[in-house]
Length: 136
Image (cartoon, rainbow, N blue to C red; front, side, top):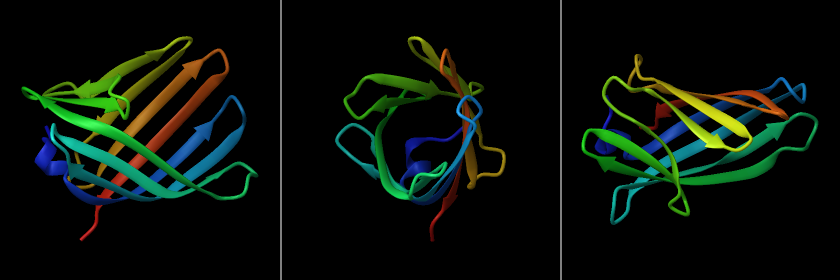
């Protein structure tokens, strides 16, 4: 299991997006930085997103990571709950009615690790795979 200190720092981020519903492929390539704040870590992604035939664009995203006992809790930037993981529990579900976001973490090749989202709903059928590799 990972802890907040394990994540702190800069990571190369490569993300593949497979949108079966729209028949579109996408890719995000950039950097992800976890840095301390008063309550844990802030995760910030910055990079280039290519999605289908659209021109490449700059993309950013931020999350808040908190330690809660042995669990890691991930919040949206506005502090709404997103998902969590803990010892022996590397999967979770986030419901965003009418859509379902199932996440799984693969830490078996640490320090390189993977996060995979399966997104389903009336107009969604996507697999989003992110690979994090330490920088430096």
